[in-house]
Amino acid sequence: EAREPGWARQGGYAEYVVVPSARYLLPLGELDPIRAAPLADAGVTPYRAVRRFRHMLRDGDRAVVIGVGGLGQFAVQFLKLLTNACVVALDRSADKLTRAISLGADEATSILDFKGSARIVFDFVGSEDMLRFGSGIVERGGAVVQVGEAGGQIPFGLGTVPHEAIFTTSIWGSIDDLKAVLEYAGARMILWDIECLSLDDVNDALDRVRRGDVRGRLVLCP
Image (tube, rainbow, N blue to C red; front, side, top):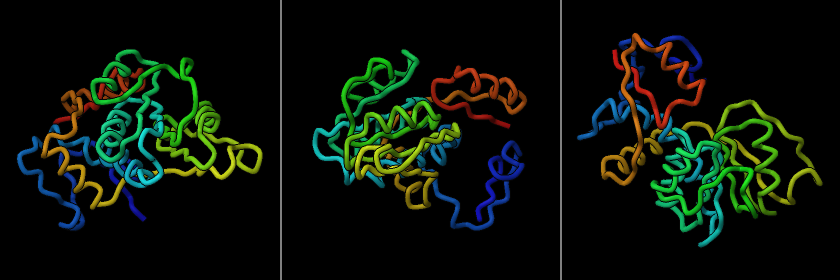
């Protein structure tokens, strides 16, 4: 029954937020609060998705990450940290594909140029086209994990998807997941891009997000 400010109710752009319990507050240590801000969403969400399905990835299996923006870039890194999979990054942006390689992806290409199949597909877009694409490349007995919230839907049933493949969603993360992400960040084992903007620039920031003109995450600073 969560009602998150800025997500399920108003208040995400407030200068102060009331935290209902101290259990939701985690120490940052030496992490800069501005740099740490994306970790509670863009960091923890892909961590949870990878953690839940890492057991399905054997050495050398292909794990495809569709969309290597703010979340997908973390997913590439967690896959390299938690598995021995061959990580393939897919995106339409050449700049983001280059960034994915720098973060450890074994391959990076456009969706149109992708060849072959994957044991697990992590979809950080979630449109109908991308879900259909993921269902077309996932191996029998593999998994498609939808994280992106573009609202896509595909038919499901025998004969419409590969036999015994798992189709599921992954949403946000637990407190323990966030603790793990903070530990990786504090140990400088993960990298992420941020750009700090004034709270007064919120509308410009939203326009840039809509255009896809953001390399990692924008952080609004009151």
